[in-house]
Image (cartoon, rainbow, N blue to C red; front, side, top):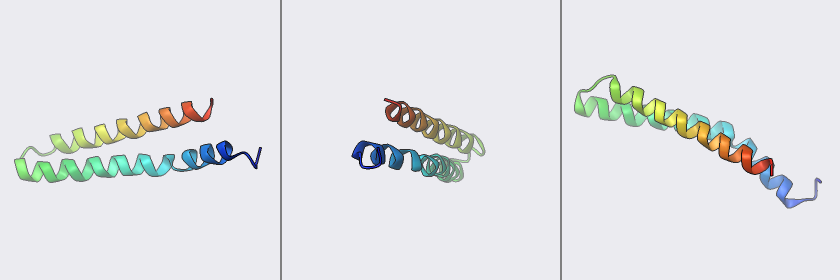
Length: 70
């Protein structure tokens, strides 16, 4: 089990889940905030960016967990 390369590949993907969630939310926040200040639509693009970043992060969690359970 510990010498199986697919085991370590799955563990690496699972370990990166937290970073992907944080990165998605942070990028959504930054992009939404930037566009809100440019277009004067505060806070709607910020809320949209954070929501899309969160959804993308959770989608990644779903895909990685589904792939690692195979």
